Image: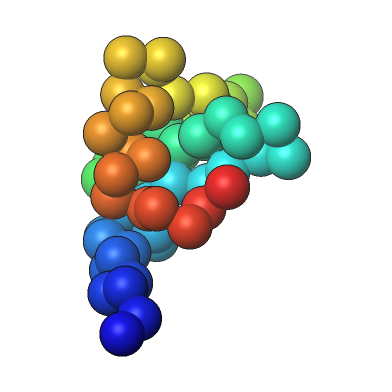
Amino acid sequence: MAKQKLKTHRGAYKRFGVTGTGKYTRRKGHLSHLRRKKLGGVRRLYDGKLPVHPTHTRRLGRLMPYSG
C-alpha cells in the first residue's frame, strides 16, 4: 500500500516563496493600511521580498513539505 502524502498548508503556501537555493522569502507587513499617506520611497521599500529568518525555516519546511 502506498504511503500517504503530506498536505501543504495553503496559507503558508500563499504567503511564502522559495528561492532556487531553498531559502524562504516573505513580504513585509503593513502593506495596505494607510498606504496612500506613505511617501513614494517608503512604498517602494515594501515592494521587495525579504528572506525569512533561519529560525523559522524548519517550521516552514513542515508546512510546505514539497516546496524544495
